[in-house]
Structures are given as structure tokens and as C-alpha cells.
Image (cartoon, rainbow, N blue to C red; front, side, top):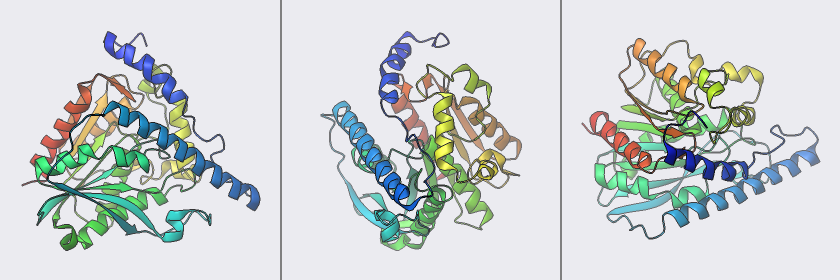
Length: 345
């Protein structure tokens, strides 16, 4: 941690790192072939995720206790039909053939832009109960910008491997367009955004939307994105230990997400492998000075610029999972400014 210049941030990293280490990823990241062992593995992973989500949600509740409610915004849970299955009879989402999303809509919304958000969490945590306690930022954005925000609870790894999570997210974008009248949105004004693994899904959805002929996106927000499955950048070496998210965590994330080794080179899984980035929408890239993912995000942003995409890039003093108190609000203001420029007109 000697590379961190800010003493306050060093203290925060020291506090956060044990909490991250106390939330280990599943030790077995591929489903067993034996049917009995397979069912037991699915059940154990689901139980572990629920425990982690509850723990995280409780920490967020404690940190945000006393925060005022956001008035003037309706929050509604919806179900979005999706395809594909993990093959486990106990999976509620696959059995139902749908995923959950929360729609934050200003009261009286009509013909508003729509912003879809894909949460982070290493592809395997961050959804469920956590989304229920992090809605204030989406409600605030909906009210302040006059947009409808859709927070998508996509199916997660390691049970739901690539391409299920990213196909869920692309389906959610198409669903928002086809249900524009019900949502009170303008289907020609749509943007996507997310952080960490969620930003990976954002980048992939933008590629899918371009390659599949729509929906046409007004912008994409890549907040501390995981773009390269190779995990071999200089920032991976510099900050690979002792800076909250480690290089080991990065490898674990990709091991849980990818179905086969070949998937590591699929641009819809690891967007750095796209043959061209031309034709992508205006992009906001937010990076951390001490983040293992810093250099891959920086390289992706520079390649976007080189291939003719409008890019806004900003770095903040943060590691992946630990930041100075002012970084979170500053990031949200930056996202709002980006959306005002490219989504609201």
C-alpha cells in the first residue's frame, strides 16, 4: 500500500480489506458433472450468495441510516422475460423464465429518457437484497435528471455463466424499448451504465446493440470496468496485493463467469477482444488511481478515442472497493453530467 499517497485512503483500505477477505468466492467455480453433487453445489452457491448479500446489505443500511427518503419517485419491481437456463430445478429465475428489475420513475413520467443500470459484484454478488438498499442513488438520479432508471437484477455466476448474464442485460435493454409506453419513456433516448463487473456487461451490451442493429444507445457509463480477462496489465502487478481487490480476485471473477477457456477471447465476455470499437456510443470511463483494473480501462478508453468514439475519462484516488468519502458523490455527479449531455437532449 506504499503507492497510495493519501493517508486517509490508506486507512480506508486497511479497514475494508478484511471485510472483502471475509466474503470469499465459492471454492468450486464449475458445476460438478455428477447429478447429486451438481444439485448440492447449486444449493450451496445460492446459500453463500444470499448470506453475502444479507451481510453487505446490512453494512449499507448502517452506513446510510438517517438518510432522507427520495420524494417524487415511484419504485416498482417488474419481471423481464429471459431465455436460457442454468439447468438446476431449484433456480427461481430460470424456472420462472424471468429476472427482476426495479424501475425508478418520476411521478407523472411521460416520454422521458431511460437509463439502465447493471450492478457490480464480481459477476456473483451485488444483486438481490443489496439492490433493495442501494436504490436511493437511482431514485435521486431519476428525480434530478427527469429520467426513468431501470436497475437490472441479472442472473449471476457461477451458476449462470457467460453468456447468460450479458444476454439478460441486453434483453433488459430491448424490453425497455418494447415497453416504452408502459414505462413512460422515449425509446429513442436510452443509455446504459454500471460499475466493475456491471461495467463489463455495459461494454458488452453496447457491442451487442451495435452488432445486432439496435437498440441504438445514446451513451454508456463504464465505472471502474473489468474489460480484459487476461489480468496481465501493469496495474495488476502494481496493485495486485494489498489494495482491496487483488489479482487473485480478478482471476476468480473470470473463472466463475466464463464457461470455457475460449470464452476469454469472446468480445461479449471480454470486450477488449472486439475487432473494432467503431460505431459505439459516447462513453464515460471512470478509473481508480490504485485499482488493479486501471490500466485495462485506460487502454479501452484510448482505443475508443482512436476509433472515433467520443470519450470522457476521469481518474479518482481510489482502489477497487475503497475510496475517499468524496469520490462516490463526485462520481455520481460526473455520471449525471454525462447523461445530461448525451441522454437528455
